[in-house]
Every structure is written in C-alpha cells, then in structure tokens.
Image (cartoon, rainbow, N blue to C red):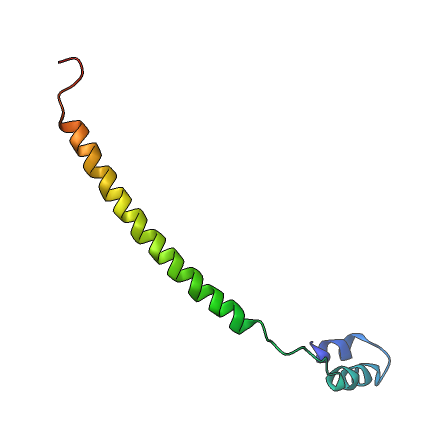
Length: 79
C-alpha cells in the first residue's frame, strides 16, 4: 500500500496514519499447510506411472512401425 500517496490525497490529518497502524497490527491467521506433502507424493506416484506408460507406448510405436514397414514391403494388391 502506498501510504505516502494516501497521506497526500486524504485531507484529514492522522487518518491515514491511524489506518496504517491498524493495518500493520492486523494479523490474519492462516491454517497450517498439511496438504503439500500429500500432493508431492501423488505427483511422484503419477510421474512414475507416466514414465511407465511412455515406455510402453514407445515399445508399441516401434512394433507398429515394424508392422508398417513390413506391409509397405509387400507387393501391391494390384500386382
């Protein structure tokens, strides 16, 4: 908050100082973060699943490419 700017704009002396003191004294209690470790564990688990899926997909792709190469090497149907 730009308190200096507000002090210039507000004509009532001490009003902005009062608000500033009240604002700085205000402490908002935030709950303790207990979910981040759980989320991190899920991310690691998901990452391992993703890696295994990618590896299996690459193997399938290689298999399909071999099958395509085999089909392309066959004589055309017209011959």
